[in-house]
Image 1 (tube, one colour):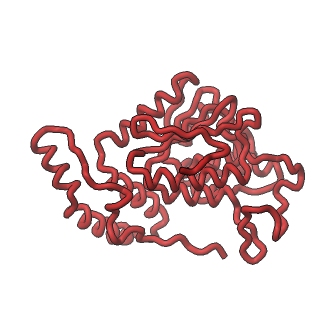
Image 2: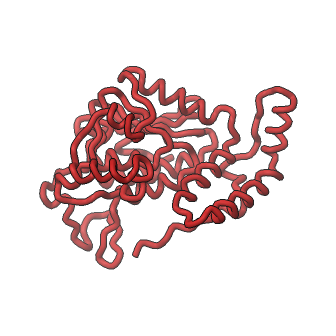
Image 3: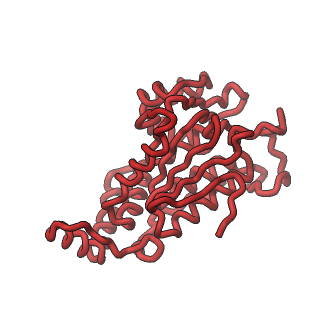
Length: 290
């Protein structure tokens, strides 16, 4: 079992809860947190007892951005530098992007319970999540231009798809920090709750999403929707929809799901994400970093 250095982890009634555990550092992001998040999604994908994943923070912050302990050298990459860096022809792969690309491939629904400050990578790591629920005390900021850098973590792909181009440009150009109600109005978050009700609301939402659904169907549906956001023509979706429907149509899950519906009883789906994904999955390969 993987030991996490920056996360507290537990599974409650089929829902994994991962809590950033550096409240004294405002849960800032560094190499250890990057690796913990990569390991987290490997673990939750492989665990059939996990139906969905909630990510939240401890203390006053969700994640207050990158750890700036190196001062003005924080973002100055030198080839052959820190352990854990991936250098491709002299270009360091952005650690936040490695995390969000792994989230993009997740086979379990991801829910952000944003308890406080979500700034920089703390904001951009929210974008590949399926649901974002905020505390009324949460604050958000795509602050890169105020630090002299540019957006990361694939946010130039995710953010305009969530909130539209004008709002994405406004937030990125200005780098200003804004509150939960503005995030709600723009569609960045789906709900705002009192701080003491946040986690219970996230758990209720996770159970609503998964309690009556076949896990393999949820995993495939997540990938169908996320992957097809970038498809150049709906025919691309039609092709993979047809393969998925045919594969699922002959599964034990379908026999159970239809039988349970006709017999007016809860379904007990037998197929497992760890063993019963269809042979055509994954149908889309991640392009190389060049």
